[in-house]
Amino acid sequence: MSTLSTLAPAEGSTHYPKRLGRGRGSGLGQTAGKGHKGQLARTGGKVRRGFEGGQTPLHRRLPKFGFNNTQFETKYSVVNLEQLEKLSGVVTPESLKEAGIVHTFPVKILAKGKLTKSLTVKAHKFSNAAKAAVEAAGGKTEVI
Image 1: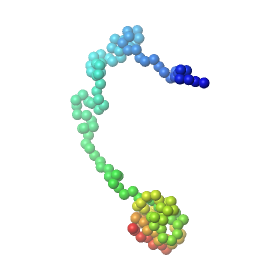
Image 2 (image 1 turned 135 degrees about the horizontal axis):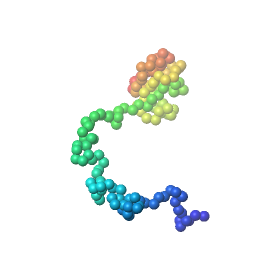
Image 3 (image 1 turned 90 degrees about the vertical axis):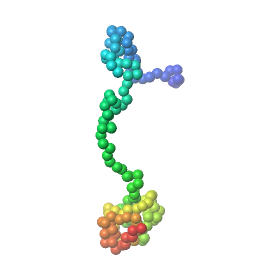
Image 4 (image 1 turned 60 degrees about the horizontal axis):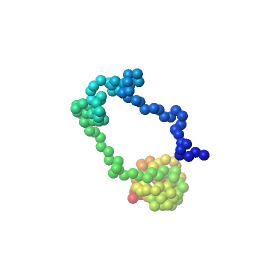
């Protein structure tokens, strides 16, 4: 049974820290791996990410571009003809939700699959091919 006092890291998973500035024989004496002089050899001598020595940084030299309106776009729940094949009569977005085919509105009907029965389909949008397929099967399409 292991207890907190017997826990230890796995063999070989830990390393000794570098002992900087402990003489030339250690290989990390004298300048302690920091090179000679300059900002990076000093304490606190770091430069922030993207800093280019006072030159206007790249992210400010390049122009801004692009526009994205996906936050406000209309996202349709897609229903294919092969899914409508399982239904009968008048098909509305509410009946599609009850059947578990869609979960959100608005609904768009697409032409994947075949439709063999006559249906009255009411939806928010139709593809041209889907509209033609429903009407070819003897049904009607109605845009809500």
